[in-house]
Structure formats: structure tokens, C-alpha cells
Amino acid sequence: MAELTPMLKQYFDIKKDYEDYILFYRLGDFYEMFYDDAITASKVLDITLTKRNAGSGKTAPLAGVPYHSCDQYLKKLVESGYKVAICEQVEDPKTAKGIVKREVVKMITPGTISDLEMLTEDANNYLMSISQDENNYVICYGDLSTGMLKYRIYDLYDEEKLIDSLYILRPSEILIREDLLILDKIRDFIKTANLDASITTQVRKSISLSFGLENIKSFFDVSTLEGFGIDEGSRATIDAISRLIDYLKYTQKIELSHMKKIVFSMATFLVAFSFYAQNVEFGVKGGLNVAFFTSDAKSEESKPRYVYHFGVTAEIPVMDKFSIQPELLYSAQGLNGKVSDKFDVPPVPGVFPKGAKGSYEVKATQSLTYVNIPVMMKYYVMEGLSLEVGPQLGILVGAKQIGDAEVKINGKALPEKYYDFVEKSYGIRPGKNTHDNKKAFKSTDLGMNFGLGYKLDKLNFGVRYNLGLTDVVKNRKGKGYLKNAVLQLSVGYSF
Image (cartoon, rainbow, N blue to C red; front, top):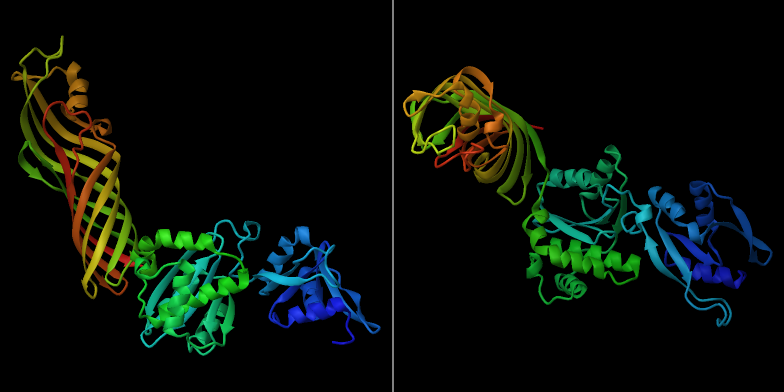
């Protein structure tokens, strides 16, 4: 080292603390790299490799990039699996005595990229830490660019779920102790699944519980972690979160207040949902609808319609025995049979006299078709068996009246010229016909679902009752209601 120039002596003094990093050494308007770093950078970045005087008549391999356009080079290095340490001048060259003082001010690794120009717009850039204790695996993952920080807990026998989470979350960098047995499986999976994930192994064994707790509390500036839903007695949880925080502080060397604010404000939501979320399970389903209406009108010889439904599902586990399942279903509904009732007719000059009494009798099939969007909350009372409840929004896509309807005013058959008026007012089209009467019904319908489900491996069986909450008739005159009711029997398959 005595033979090196003062600048290269400084370079090596800094480089010895960042041996696993390519050191971007600020020199004027360039970031310079020397020796092995220069050789590596010239190959990866396709830039010129040159030489610089190293002292005592020797030369050092040299490569450099302009500091004002360094982002594109940093991105390429990180995407190639390298970590970069940014070394800046930290004193004014005009007042410096001797060589200008330089320090590493930031490290850029695959999981700590925060500059938006270096990120993919439609994907998170997760840094993940993995830890374990005698009961659980815990992963803690965050996105420095958004300030998001979450964790998940897995039983030790659920290694496959932990491995699956790597494919779903696609972390850019994984921090893991080198003594964890699952490390080899993670390496093999990343290679097999062709994931762009860098692994940073850490020699330090599990941190003490007290040290980890104080580290996390200090970071969030709180006296207890209860508000975050964090179990202060879980060694794996404390270890995973503390390691990720330490790594961020070490590499960024700045106050990470944006992460503190977002994590703290979102903590309740994350604990209740994201911290325990596992894999989303997609599927298809279909089956029988036993459809009818509930109404305040008299119903004679009414029979349900035996029709069908089919669609797609997505079950999202939230907690140990609780999941949410949104669905998108095409559903045929309505009623067969005979319905009759009497009603008061509002006076309409030139149409209906004051005090007129109306009656109708319908022998017909009323067909309604909906695109239904139920969101079911599922609670598993035992393995495979779930209780289900949830709201449903129906979007009407078709309505037809098929059959014979008779309407009378003051005991006399309604003249044909008033058919349109009665249909618009009461949802009934007099006469024998197959008639599109979609305009007589509301475009949306709200309901509530109650049911049971049973999972047998990839097969799903369900029985569900949908109770309509809103009147389906669009422009009803006077009192009355007509509401959907459907009993569903379904079979599904999960992918």
C-alpha cells in the first residue's frame, strides 16, 4: 500500500469495508472503478477499460461512468446481480487539506432500489428477510420506494407455502442466515423458477429477543409493538423484522421516516389481513339455481325455475380459519307460475278514472339473467367444511316475460293502447307473448348470501341461499315489492 498514490490509498481504505460491492468512487464528474471492479464493470456495462497511474511506475485498471447519467449503469449492474456502494466527496475540495475526504453515502442492492427511474412501474421491488424459531418461519418484506412493510408467519411444516410466497411476491433480494436449513431449498427454487432474486446471506446467528425488540421500537419510536399486532415473544418475527430494518439503515444511511409513517398508519389493516395472507386460490364453479321471487302479491300455482349458474372464484386466505372469496357468476333466475293481485290505480286524466281498481293475473315465466358479484366470508369450522356469508351485487343483463298475462281495470280487460303504460308502471305486459321487458326492471340488485361449503382436495361443493334485499321492479306505482330468491347447488374446481 505504501507504493500507491494517495488517492488509491484512500480508495482501498474505503473498499476494504465493502468487499462485496462494486465501489463507485466519485472523482470530478465521474464515478471511477478500479482493479477488479473496473474489469467487472467494463464487461457488464460494455464500457471502455483503461489504466491509471497507481504509483511506483505501476498502473491500475480503470473504468468510469458520468455521475449525471449513472442511473442507467446502476440499474444494469443491479439487474445483473451486483451490489454497488456510492462513494461521494464529503468536503469542499477548495478547503480540503490533501486528498478530499470521501465516504460511502449509500449502497444500492437489488432490494433497496428507490429511484423510480430504475424501477419497473407495474411491480413492487421487495427486499425480504427470512428467519425461523422452534415453531415458525417468518418472512418480512418491504418496498423502499413506497414505504410498504409487511410480514407473514408460516408453521415449520409449511415450507412449501413459504417457497410459494417467493414466486408470488418475487422479491428482488432475500436476506437469510446462512445456518438456516431452508436456504438450499430457496436457492434451488430461485434457479428452477428462474426468479430474478439475489440472496444475501448473513453470518450472525439469531439476535437476542431484547436487542431485536429495542431495535424495532427505536425505529418506529414506540414503547410497545402491540399497536402493530406484533407478538413480542415471537423470536422469529422479531429477528426477521429487526434484520430487515438493520439492512435498510446500513445500506441507505439516511432517515427512513417515510417507511415509519406508512407502516404505522397501515398497521391495523396489515395485521388483520396482509400479515396472514397466503396464496390466492383461483377456481371455476357451476351448478343448479332453484330460482323464485318473494312478493307481497298472492301467488297461485307458482313454481321455481330450475336453471343454472357458472363463473370464476378467487379464495383469499386471511387468517388461520378465515378467508374471503369474491366471485363472478352468470346466473339465470326468475319464476314460473300463476300470480294474481289487485291494486289501486292512480287517476290519470284520459286514461284511468279516479277511484279505478285494477287486477292482474299472470300465467307465465319471468326470466331474469344477471352477472352476480358475491363476496363471501368463509369460516372453516373443521377441515374442509366452511360456513359462508356475504353480500352480492347483481347486474341485470337480460329479462323476458314468456306466457300469458291479463290485466283488468274496473273488471274490464285493459285496452291494448294502454299496454305500454301498465308495463312501465307495474312490470307486466298484457297478452300472450315472449317479450323483452328488461326496461321494467332495475339494472342492479342487492342481496345477501348464506351457505355451506366443503373442499375435497381440488373439488369444491356448495349450497347457498341468496335473499334479495331490493325490489327488482324499476318504476313501481304504489306499494308492493318483488325480490329475487335463489337456492344454489354448485360444484367447483380449484387450480
